[in-house]
Length: 382
Image (cartoon, rainbow, N blue to C red):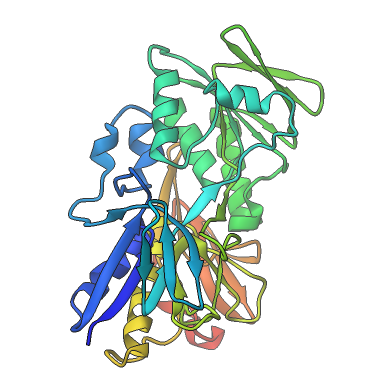
């Protein structure tokens, strides 16, 4: 008897899950991607395509066999997915790995919709976004770019653009942006690097955006204005999935949804597994790790593999920002405890258990926490 597993989403989580399931006896996998879209490595959007170092096709994921037909809705009772073409895909197990979408600047900001329609206000999340940025920058040796946001993607993008000679201004609501993601110590260090390298307008928000000829004018809440060629919105992401999971898929510790036979992984998965506030991790390495773990849970529930246990995030990532390297492992957040100033390392705990670590110019020290996460503090002390 063949078991049909449908995977919605062909990014890091979906393709990782497909690789795990592909070798299972009696399991047939359908990997469903977006209509007319070739699966690609999202880490290359700002690092490669947007700055003109790579062509869009060079970001494609090799060796991925995908059905390019966007999922539009899921009938949980019938265990069926309706695709954009009208086709219906039936499943025994469903893994939702549709990822995330960027938070955009509200249309309530006067002029935002018009600037976006003109291609001068954009997010930087997809290949289409990257091509839009590349095309605006083409032929401008020193473009004026306003980056709205100061999180990891915003910081890395600002750094990459500055390295290539563009004039960058970063605008963020918080006086010390990034504290909720990395803790205050790391955020302060990054803010110092930003101020030393690019123009910063921290503690400010845009109140209107206008196109004056070929020039973009961004007005801030203190009445000042910034003239630019391009504005990039980097305000984080939100989960995205077909109905009935428009707000993401709530999962348990093993990445199961509450509906029988449904699982989720990556940026679409909303975790509530340890009694803390809901949380998501939306970076490539962790999405792949979640996809593999969810696939192993599917195989366990089908009686084809051992129980993989709870998912415990410990994936690493790095970002190069103004000549410094920001590193992190696991699940970071505002609850950071400073454990070292030279190098700068912060450990993020919940109920006395280390869940993640982050730092600046401290890759070995941060990565040394990978094997110490999710263990009682008495076991991690060194």
